[in-house]
Length: 350
Ligand code: SF4
Image (cartoon, rainbow, N blue to C red; front, side, top):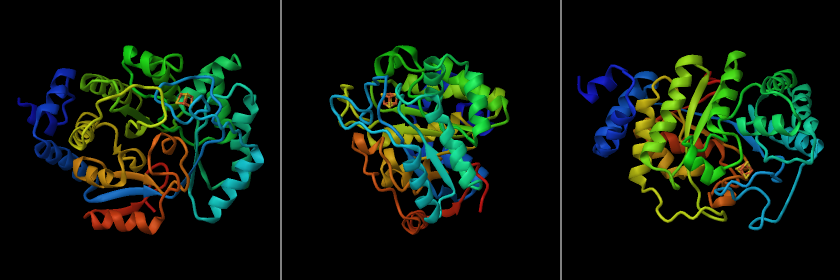
């Protein structure tokens, strides 16, 4: 059976087979990824109306790619109070958001309650709002800092109203590269273990991959295969989100950045390898809006959301600080030949 036939029959590829796909012609790869996308979603492209909140930038970890945490390059520390977070949520609810996405740095000074009780407070005021919060990296940090097991932290998240987990902190799973880019924070094995525990409770999460820095193509494929294997076991991932590395204001010395062609190939290969994860998200914040729109022709069926405000990637150079208006988002998708469909956080259509 040829590689193409294997893909068309949804036979899971080996690392070497998947790696070979990078040598294929871009358009051929795009057509194959598109046919998988169209079989599942036709021309629909999902988006949601959401708000990102990053309540603190004080972090005990020092990831080399990070421009967000307070450091020598970004000395402006902040930590929001619960009242400030609630006010932000209130304003965004009035603007029509359906999801609040809360991700923090690893601040050792706030106490466990500051991290977790905010979810309960949000839910008390806005029970209809979907709370997506706490990366596996945050869960690992809280577990170490407060001497709790992952299960204990996850049980508290459920009790306090977290509905789903974002996919952050995965970066790149290869242990050698991981040590260089984010040594000291959650390991690959721990990241996967935490998501597995979350999925065991019948809950959904997403998975990211940070690429375009010092990793190789092989490391990307290895990352995808580790996710594919866990998804075979739990079926708990809703979306895979390849994040393009942002180069400004950080400590990682990267000289070769991926071309648009390399980024689009990575999207297409993600769609082909991760056929068991339903949604492939082109997160416009890191890929640029133009490339995210193009990624729809390379397997992506989701462009994330309006966001309103974005702090993490905009600190590293992304043009996302003020989010995007819904009508602008919808028009862009339509003008690129796809059908915009608003979804909720669990991919139900409105
Ligand atoms: S990526 Fe997250 S964990 Fe790493 S330094 Fe930045 S805020 Fe801290």
